[in-house]
Image (cartoon, rainbow, N blue to C red; front, side, top):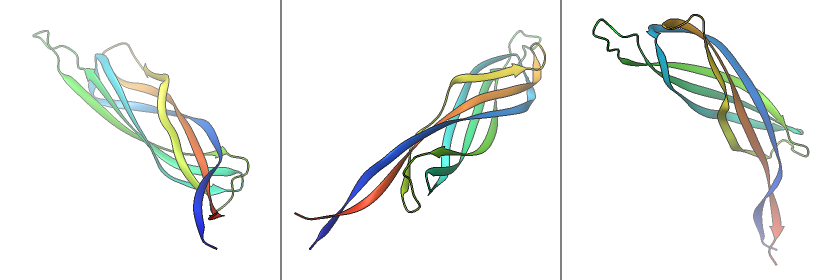
Length: 144
């Protein structure tokens, strides 16, 4: 009897990871214009009732430098790379299942806390990465 394969969703698990780091800027910061985050889950592995994962965040801070004698400053950017690991609980998951990333992003809970008033060269970075991972099991069904 011939069979075909069908994917079944076992469940979805989610978690949040808090990342904190002191940042030192090569060029002083007068005013932050924009913070850009790129989140990437680099790998995930399913075990009994859990999924273990590793990820990375690339953050770019676009900012104004202090104005010079002409009253004009320049625009600069600073890049930071963060790595992290974590796990989500997915009841029913088992080795051999596949994991699929449903969400990996930095939401609005992010803070860049300057060490001094502007212009500053150091700050504490705090942000939360939201992760959701789906577990999928491939089943063989008989062809009717």
